[in-house]
Amino acid sequence: MARLAAAVVLAAWAAVLIDLPWQAGAFAGASAMVGDCLSSFVKRRFGLEPSSKTLGLDQVPESLFPAVACSAYLPLRPIDVAAIVFVFSIGGLAMSRVFFTVGLRDRPY
Image (cartoon, rainbow, N blue to C red; front, side, top):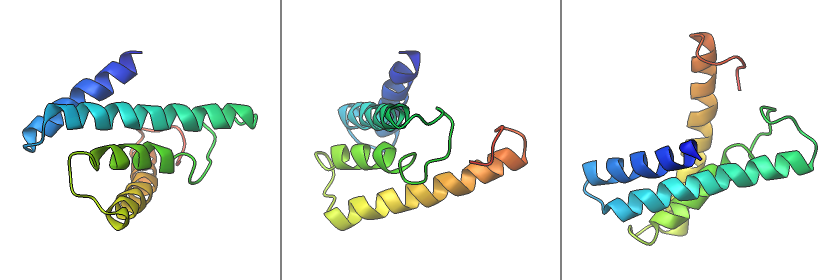
């Protein structure tokens, strides 16, 4: 619950910093958490460990849902949403490796 609240509050704050309505940030933060919960739910249904690597399932819902949510506040076309998901997915995989290398993560994924 604290993670959800932090995501909503911090995303709302970040939206204000970049001149967007706080509601856009709150909606994006909540949407990202819904995507994260959905991927966790699917992993459990398939009997996978919570921290197991599932390429795509770990990245797509968590980036797709907020990108679609932001379409209500920004003029995002489907290609823009696809680009957001692609960049988030590649960036997340790359940063995970970096965090593992510097000791901030236990696994490289």
